[in-house]
Length: 241
Image 1 (spheres, rainbow, N blue to C red):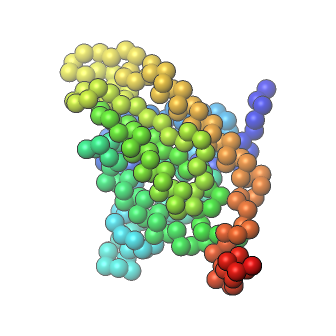
Image 2 (image 1 turned 45 degrees about the horizontal axis):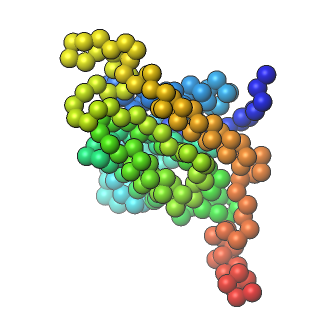
């Protein structure tokens, strides 16, 4: 019998690999561990591989209003809005997140001025986390930047909301590879890393617990943080009591 029920929780994993489908994404392979846990707990899971979509850079909700011929971001954003949990997954390149991940954060920022039904900024009540893969150091550096950006935009961040896997420095097999330079890898690369397996499990359940708490309590309390109330005069009530 399960001690916890994650009823009506939805999650979206936004894969910021540089590889278009159907090419193998090692980042997605690692994220599959977290997605698998969520699915077994009855959570509805969506995945967006951002590079597969026409999403230009920019700081506006719809870049077709600013010179671009096509922008799929508005329709992708509707899928993100449905989620209680948003997980950004990214490879490491030159010690930092991918250019696709940076673009995602910018496009999320372009929507951050919108408000929810309480008048709070639109990402209030949503939970954020991240998963990082690579063949060089940088998991904590990349996670720090992502999670700072998420909380600044209004996401709520639980304890230990990041996880990742890195191989040896320099060229080598990536997470989930079964062969490298003609030699078999069994089990697949990274699968037996207890550190990674533990952290991705803890991260997943921390995301689920916090999302469940917020769901039961109808999101984040609006007292003192409603942008709509602030514009309607609340600023004087709190600043000059």
